[in-house]
Image (tube, rainbow, N blue to C red; front, top):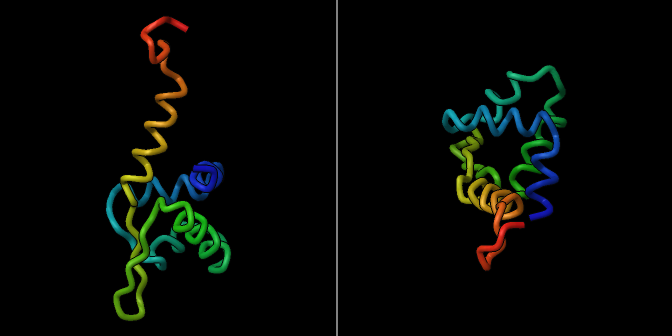
Length: 93
């Protein structure tokens, strides 16, 4: 879970996640959306992959990234649990 929240802490990674919500993208298409070096983008994609937020699928020489919904759902469930207004016993906090 720590890797997941660390990955989401960077604005570029959050933007990549937002881009991937629309569907899978190649690494080149992702990189073209940013004014930064290829190694920097690769580092961000690696952090997202290590956090299991994205899956990289190789197609010949092209790498296509897609959002891993289960990791996002896990993070949301954790956050919702942290912000719930009643305790597990049903008492108000």
